[in-house]
Length: 401
Ligand SMILES: Cc1ncc(COP(=O)(O)O)c(C=O)c1O
Image 1 (tube, protein in one colour):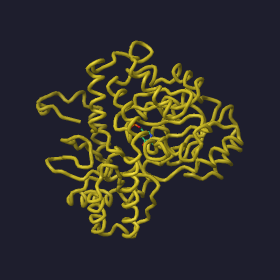
Image 2: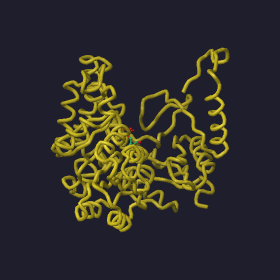
Image 3: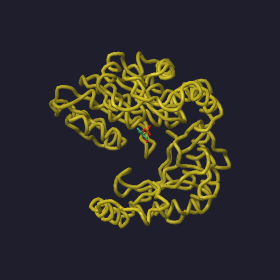
Image 4: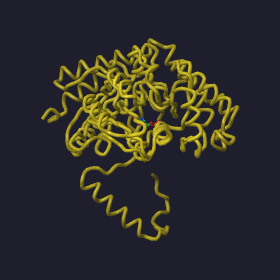
């Protein structure tokens, strides 16, 4: 958000909404939940420049350090030259290009799936897919810690929404048994975005099969990180073919922007006909498609890069455990849970003053009482960066209280 340089002399509008906003902002501030923006003055990377300072970045989902990679930049620049900046319309109108088709074909090969459909963002994918698949008379079963975009997709669908306790398969089994519905769809993150833990995927697959339910997973934080070729938790567990819809983002390990769903041809065809963010929104710029295609090649082909990320994950988790924090090397995400928002804000400030950029995560992103620092590891971090973070955490007073 930016204010006009002349904001003091400009009319502020009719005033009613402004009064509402002021009231709500005061409430947020009193609860330690008001948020603000902080622009980077550099590209994304292990080191970023913010407010004139160079900081070690532990808040980015750029897990493989591809967001500023010369390979992706070159692919995007060539497509920018060929296609220009905007696409002018949704894909169903005139915004479909060969770059979109090529990316879908590349992703289908990577995911070993019959079909892939692109979306503009992960948020658009989740809020589009769920209402296209289920509606009134149906039921959707959603893990309590699912990402906000899945939560909103469930709400928009008009299906009955049953939230089951986090990763509790028995509770889900009971809910599936007890909930009458025409169609039943279970939906879960595979790697949970704020905790870094895994969904009990093998059990979910068997349960859905037993109960005739469909399964949709969100691999946003698993794609590029888990699996022998980086194709996520489904690939890691050899379950890709048994999951009805696998959604992945291009905005995290792939270093760009956009999302996709790997699924059967009929499901992809239905989404193309029904998913409102797909139908009613201008398509992804071709330059981002070309960058993503290059990113898939890197993710699949550069095993040493993924191994570098995992070396960093193991080093950080061992260091955290040595400091007395509970930490498992399951993904690139490590929460340091502090409790109330003010404690997380203080901890973020402590880190910032010592050269680390790690943001405080507060409700509603995480449940009340679990405000935290969320450390994200990247293949671009050096051992020195990781050791510096551990040293700062050592000095973080009261964290373990
Ligand atoms: C689990 C999960 N799903 C979906 C999204 C949304 O993806 P995008 O940032 O591409 O909109 C996110 C991103 O924050 C996420 O963490």
